[in-house]
Length: 240
Image (cartoon, rainbow, N blue to C red):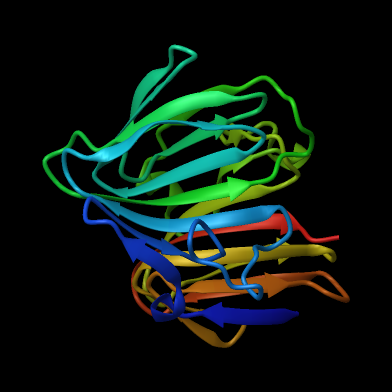
C-alpha cells in the first residue's frame, strides 16, 4: 500500500474575493505536473463562496461533477430546467455529458464551503443530468456511506448515480473510533477530512489535508482512525 499526504498549506489556488479556492490537483491557473489527479479523479477543489455571490452561468461537458456541501448551502440552476438547493452534509451530482450550462450560487446569509469533485466519465457524449439528495449525518455515524457511485455493488443504496466505476463516500467518525474500507488491487482512495484529524495507514491527516492511498500488490483494509471527532469525504477510483 502506497500513501501520500498533501497538507492543506501546500495546495494551489487563488482568492478571488468572492471565492477562495484551494486546489488539491492542477486546476485553472494552478499547474503542478506531480498533482494531476488520481485515476479518473481529476479535480478536488476546496471552495469558500461568500454570501450573495457564486458562479454565473457557464458550460461543461463530459465530466461527472459531485458537490459535497460542508457549511451553508448552494443553489443550482441549469439550461435543462433544473433548479435546487443543496444544504450542508448533502450532495449534488451533475453529469455534464454532451453539454450543460449551469450556475451555482450562495443565496444564504453565511459563507458556503464545499468540496467540488470532478471525475472523468466512462464514456463521452452521454445525456446531461442533475440530481441532489439529502444524507443525514446520523446515517453516516462511524461508517462510510456511498454518496455518489457508478459501481455495481452500490446499486441498491441511496448513492446518486455517476457514469464511472468510482464511488464517493462520507462518514462522521467519533473520537477514538476506527473504520475500515476494503481497497482492491488496482484501485486508489483519496480522502479529505472536513474537520478534526485522522490517522490513515499510520500517517496523520489533518483537516482539509488530502491523502492518496493505492493498493499496488494486494487488496488492503484501509483503516481510518479518528484522532478527534471528524467528518471525512473519500473517493475510491480505478487506477489501472
